[in-house]
Amino acid sequence: MKAKWMLTLLGVLVLASPVRGEAPAGKTGWVDTERVFKEYHRARELLGDDSPLVRQKQEKEAELEQLQDELAARQKDLEQKALLLNEAALRTQQEEILRRQIQLRRLIQEAEVELQGKIMAVTKELSREIAEKIEEFARREGYSYIFRGEALFYHDPSLELTDQVLAELNRGHEAVPASGE
Image (cartoon, rainbow, N blue to C red):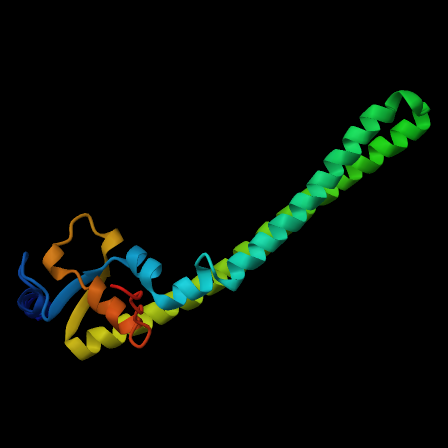
């Protein structure tokens, strides 16, 4: 009895499993997500060269560079005055410069960590938006699978959906051609 039940179960599994090499039901496509990130209007707004995040980074870099320049000038000044100072005064000023160098390194590290955190948060939000649009597109257009092109060893160019996905993402934000084009 048990053997008959096992054979029946095995038969059902064999009949229900797809034939090797059989294509999955529905349409399949792939998307170049790197290109989507580069060309998605929101990614350009939030992470592009003119974005508030990049401007904030540039301002912080300028501030830190000014501190580095001030510290270098102080170091140079101390080197020039070294022969005029007594040993205790020289050591005190050297320790102060060293303390400020350590403080500056810490400020640089904190700024980098803060910036990376902001970039990661924005990237996560953009990834979520892109994934939602791809899912909406897939459902509406009848796709069973849409893969990330970067994850595939081979992808048939005729199955690429990058342009269609970008059109969805950028709808209403199409680039306005410059005058004379």
